[in-house]
Image 1 (cartoon, rainbow, N blue to C red):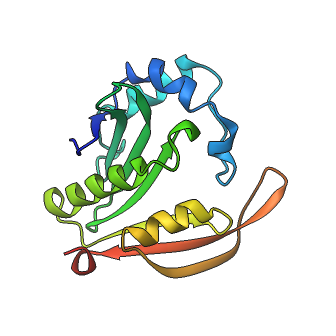
Image 2: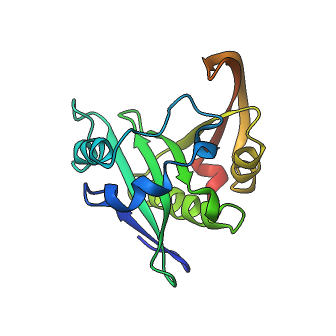
Length: 175
């Protein structure tokens, strides 16, 4: 898939080598419980499992893309969407901080959302975000997501409790 400035390539194990250095930055993980993987090989193993684009049970589509900038031919991060058997989807994204603030996340999310609504005919897309992550909150709201939930103490990681918002974008709001 592509946008004006980006290519979104289905994740393959070969992407581990180029994405690993970008996804090591601790700032990416400030508001999520995961930590960067320990090695390019660990990331390659993860991506190998994702190449099929299906959950192990085959009941969910696991769609992951490497985000590559067109003009510079540099990778910026990754996009993720899970399409469930009930026709809804979840979206997530990780871009290297060196690419924050340039509109790449908005552009990549817009393309993924268009794909999900058109090609998968999903009825809605959900995103969960730490309440402290104001940049992601602004991104979701800019894309038309509506805040539909709040969970106090949703998680505990990095020595702190995390509250979480749930955002939703319906197919009717998208069209």
